[in-house]
Length: 141
Image (cartoon, rainbow, N blue to C red):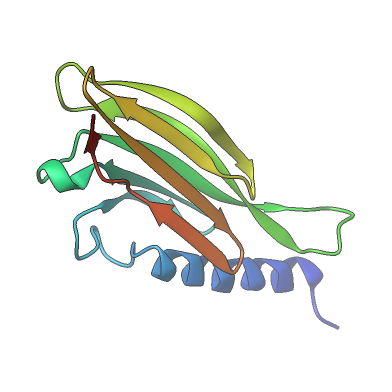
């Protein structure tokens, strides 16, 4: 007889490995230097995403997010990904940010960074089998 708890954990670990590969966190940073893996475990990882990286190596800021695999008891799905914003960093003087969407279970994160003359929009959504991240490009008026 298969232990359902062990089977569920194995499914989560395999799925999580795929999610990590998709967003480029198999190493400490992806090729573009836009994602830095800060911490990870069996059912979570924490990444720092560069925002507006087209203006320099650090960009105008960063969004630090926690991605956790969560069980969905009573659902036909075995698990989901819960996204939580842990911190938002601003590297350039005169820039501010506003959180438009703050994540949740299989939900998007959207943060707008603004200066008096420019802006950049960061968007990400991680869910089982699909990951989308837009680090944004700085646009000026």
